[in-house]
Amino acid sequence: MSEQDSAKIPVAAAGEPQRTDPRTFLVRAVSMLGQLALPIGIALFSIFRKGEVADKALIFLPFVLILVGINFGIAYLRWLRLTYTTGKEDIRVESGIVSRAARSVPYERIQDVSLEQKFLPRLFGLVEVKFETGAGGAEDLKLAYLTEAEGEALRLLIRERREEEAAEASTHPATDAAPVPADEPAEVLFSMDAGRLTTFGLFEFSLAVFAVIGGAFQYADSIVGIELWDPDLWLGIAESQQGWIAGLGPMLQAISAIVGIVALVVVGSATGLARTYLRDWGFVLEKTARGFRRRRGLFTRTDVVMPVHRVQAIELGTGLVRYRFGWHELKFTSLAQDAGQSSHVVAPFAKMEEIAPIIRAAGFVPPSEDLDWHLASRKYRFDSALLEGGVFALLAIPVAIFAPLPFVLVPLGLATFFAGANLYAWQFHRHALSATQIFARRGLLSPRTQIASRVKLHSVEISQGPIARRRGYATLHLGLAGGKLSIPGLPVDRAFELRAAILDSIAAKDFSRLGG
Image: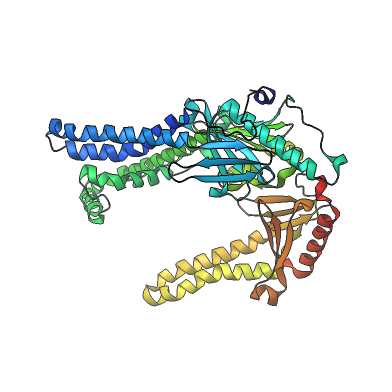
């Protein structure tokens, strides 16, 4: 559906309380039943496995029916008692069956409006509307559920009223942006097909499935009647298998070990693929008249729009393995949050030639080796290596006292390794300052680069610990409303030079001209 079509859908009239879609209570009721399914299933198995099914069913099944009826009744009352009102200056949501709660959020405080579709609401064609206030977490306002058209229309309405307030409050009316046409076509900047998703998933190796199995064990004790967390149980199983394993011979033992490793890789790869498909299915990033629009998700579908002027910084990252194949990830740091994170992933798995146009569309310049890159202080390099290796070197003392002498080589080897790695990685910790941006890069095996606009930084702070004060270096903290950017180990003179330059950029910019 286009934005023009969405704008034609009627939304709540100003000052008139409105209810969400009537199917909301069905979605809530089914969701609540899903939470009760496992406990009810365990109870059924525990009661009926001892026989006398007919007699117990006469007692238990009516109880289940009453529980289901209460569940649907509560869900209906919650829907009936929830209303929202779009006023001239704020949106107000009232809820509560017995005790009422009301919350009003001024339009000027709403940083972004996003739409989310989890699997069950998606079956009904419903969306959850999230109003990002910049506070994050439970402080953000949510409205569940509206139809897709109503959700999109409400999002447009909120943005229009926020822009109207910004225009009225502006001291420079002549510089206000022109009205944005609703029917302006979107430009696809980045998307991922099934082939790209599959490749991405193979790099997202994960063993999280074993954590899920471990969680299932919490309920398994009452079903199978075995203490699965009893260490004696597993020790006994291991001892009983020792003779069988020894009888296989060296060749079969080696083959069994290889098969086990392959099975572990297969499980980890399958888990990574599943997570990637669930999270990023249908991933598409578009440049619209109102900013960047990102949609993704198989069962839970999210639709987020990020205005260009609210992108405060960008982050280029990669992974230990994918870096060797030229794959990178691009994030935008903005005032709104994305799944609890301050950064929005706009290109999760892309080559640099695909990422560069997105960076430029956000008003940033990609990093280059032609920049005047500076390294951290050599004193900071030495102190960091000493601290990294010193922790393991100190562990060698108790090991030497309580363990055989050869074991001392383990912490000493680790101390040498981490100290050496830190000394070598120093040359990859760099920063640069251009006319409009500041760059910070760090990481040896999986480098990460942060780029911030000088005029969009909110603060600049220099901090020094006791060691740094004695050694003559400092950390520069750059304030972003949606994230953090720090450059450690700067020579003090360089830190003050950067702070002065950035403060001059901030002071020279009239922020009333940046837009709402």
